[in-house]
Image (cartoon, rainbow, N blue to C red; front, side, top):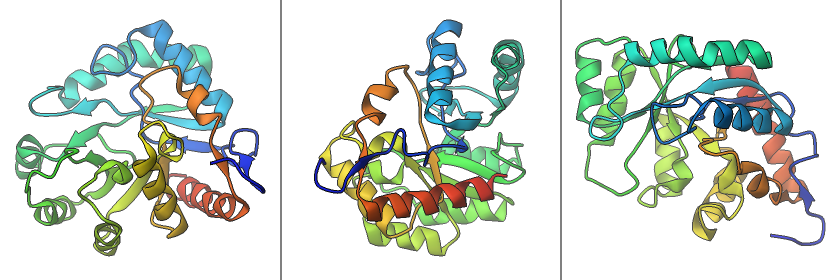
Length: 243
């Protein structure tokens, strides 16, 4: 990634005021932070990068992380709220929902979801193509009064750029994982992320933070002048959507 005219993302000022709408800092509920001290370390690292507003978005998966909204609210109030007060953080609770049959059941039952604002819901797909009727489920999300924000679309190998454009046309918003701009997930994901960035397909930037070693990967992200321009526009759009 290094070359003439490239500059590091960290230290550029482009991350200042970052609204991080995707993280796993609420400990004891999924595969994210391992405890209070670990969560504190992650949050301070994100603050150092420029995050001004945090969202804790634990997984809700029917077969793996069988969290429910009531239990997550209680865990957030008991664990995260005091830590946020101590660190003077602006942090809210939402969730990252796997689009599976249990999620469909929640929609059908008109279950109150944990949202990013009054209507945006963060969702994810299985990494492999399962043949699930995605178009139908996104329609159901819209019919239920929500707007889907698809987490890390660059990581789904079965989704092409044309698929992303179709999702955008039907009103789905797309969230870039900051680490996808590094080699953290591999060269293919990295290349796809930069392609989507150049095409202005993203609406949000999330850390998807599970661990406190993010900085060593984010610190090596470098951008060309054109990429910095695209990233600056994305950050401005992101801050405006969840202001």
